[in-house]
Image (cartoon, rainbow, N blue to C red; front, side, top):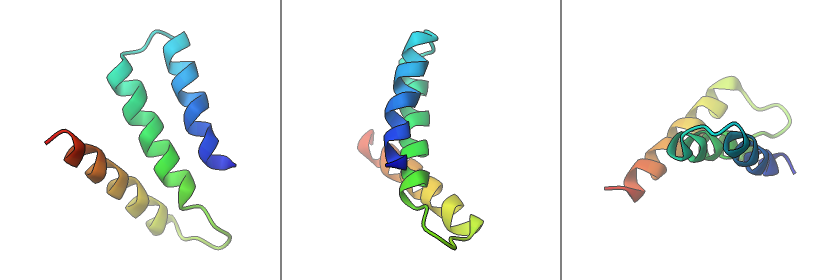
Length: 62
């Protein structure tokens, strides 16, 4: 259920009238990191999940 926080980030970003590209990028990273959350997960694994999400996001635009 935590991955649904990404939707809340999108809604909050659009309500705050923030640049849509930035809103979607932040929502993607938040969703990617929260998808990796499991009991006993290390911070390094969460960081790697964020980097992997950014990598996939960048591949989509190249």
